[in-house]
Image (tube, rainbow, N blue to C red; front, side, top):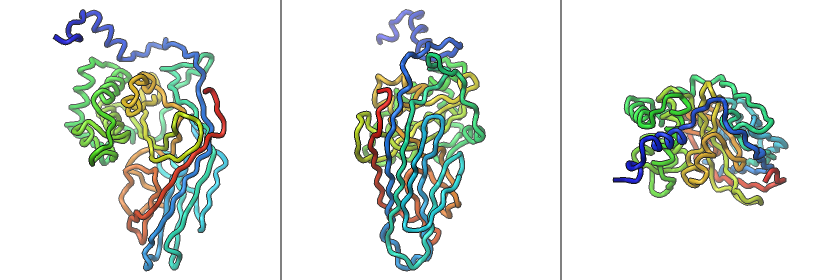
Length: 343
């Protein structure tokens, strides 16, 4: 007999109640101040080996913008050709540059900015002492966050798997269902970037392989939430090491949020919770300050609209030559801390 099966029934129910958050308006008030981090960030894209016969080259780069969790200022863009900054879907911002032939076979674009990133805590689940407890409002794209993505379908099989997870946890409210899904993902998916197939946010791959990176973790979380009627959205940006300093950022990080009427939008980071089990509770209801967000959503259409397919997600530079995707692009991302706040 396992340890869990030998527990008294009443104690087992108590454990379940502790695992599934049930908001009753009396969440404990946090006395820990919200942490913040200010840093300079540089994003460089180098388009190279352009074909000599190219007539038109388009380059798109995601541009971060300020929101309730981050302030972006002192944006400086260095480019050899005229560019434009445009609004795109879901509040995203895009730098677009078009080069007409004849031109050199390579060119670079650099974007520098200063960011202050604050901890993003749900004010209902983690209320601050003396702070506002206002819920974040539903956004204009709420219906979109209930719909399928190309690699996150909402078919009968996904709906069945999601229902099995919430039924096993005896979850009733949307908040309980979201936490049951979060616990399931963190407990059953391993952060593992070996082999092939990971990193695309393919829910069927993640459910089969039970491993992957942040994109795969959140494909399952978001897909299961949507499958049980809970709006959930995807965001992507870059992570920063916990230690203050400077250096190169090797790759992206992504995270999620879900929405209930009781709580508003709730931040979640299932992959970070899987990597550090001691922060499992923290990352259900909070995102730390060691990140910067660039774009939101998947299956994205850029501005102006690209001729290729919708982008699975948009964090790295994207280019087209004469209307066809072009992948010969070097990229580099660097940061250095400017101030330390609330450490």
